[in-house]
Amino acid sequence: MSKHEPPGRLLGPQFTPPQRAPYATRPETSRGRFWPEEESTTRSCYQRDRDRIIHSTAFRRLKHKTQVFVQHEGDYYRTRLTHSLEVAQIARSIARVLGLDEDLSEALALSHDLGHPPFGHAGEAALDACMAGHGGFDHNAQALVLVTRLEHRYAGFDGLNLTWESLEGLVKHNGPLFAPDGAPDEIPEAITDFAWNLELETHAGLEAQVAALSDDIAYLNHDIDDGLRAGLFETEALFEAPLAGPVFRAVDAAHPNLERGRLIGEAVRRLISAMVADVVTETGRRLAKARPQSVAGVRAQKAPLASFSPVLKDELVALKAFLFERMYRHPRVMQVMQKAQVALTELFAALTAEPALLPPDWIEQCGMAHDRATARAVCDYIAGMTDRYALQEYRRIFHMEFQL
Image (cartoon, rainbow, N blue to C red; front, top):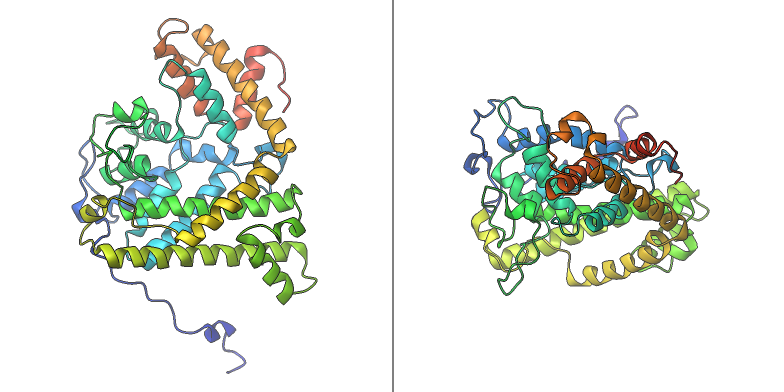
């Protein structure tokens, strides 16, 4: 090798992506948008959906919304925004290998957490309790509300006017919303009341299924990373954890005395690669058996075609149990989240009792104090807040700081 030849040449031939598979969701056969629009001459309809999501107000707000750690606890830890970007990278990579529409998978990955309120799942639980008797609160339903009603960026319509396929994937990326026996599960009103039939009884296309699996891959791995760096558990404890333990031990054995940051980074990289490879292999096996010839064939399946293998599923359950005990229910995390729930609950009570405290454009959506319309408007208002804006509003309304 010439001394001027870059060492990257030693890595072998460049990867050649496969042709678009017959079961991929195709932009040229999209069911279109709720409000008819002339499509772009330079972007596919799914590229345009992705771009609209990136430019939305809700997407920008994710940078100050909790993933596990509240935003003020440190600049290193993931937020909803950085998590969404990591999910998008993984989803696009898997979609490319499987011959799917990468842009649709990326759009769904970027939008999957748009509906999360401040303070993560703790905030969701608080708003759901506040909305008891008024339809409850669900972050997937709230994402649909955002992209169909609450975003005000376009002159001709509310929302982002995404394609049918993007809306379907947003609502159904975790599977059909009907029970296996055909009876409806408890489906949020925001979804059932939507004026466009999203075929809630079927699976979404493979691009949405891949985005959902990519979410699992991303959050489990970056929670390991964040948990270790936050000192919620040590690498020695993780050595004995399901799935992750063998990978961390292998890196430690191959690179003794490796600095801690490099150990974490190398092990997480290997773990992500192993999980992606498992998805690709298992999904390929299912596709070979089902042989769908169109996206309609994917939707007609009784089980998802994109999946982890049975062995990895069991290991993931055990790893999640480890993280649940050592991280998600760690006293340091729980203390902050319980306080955050109190803040949101008190905010909701104050605003529903006195809607005049809301900004003028939100007051217009309210009825009488404590009625259903007011409760929904207040819920939408709070759900759109960032962590720090929720605390700022608490200070404005109660004239005191709320200490997390």
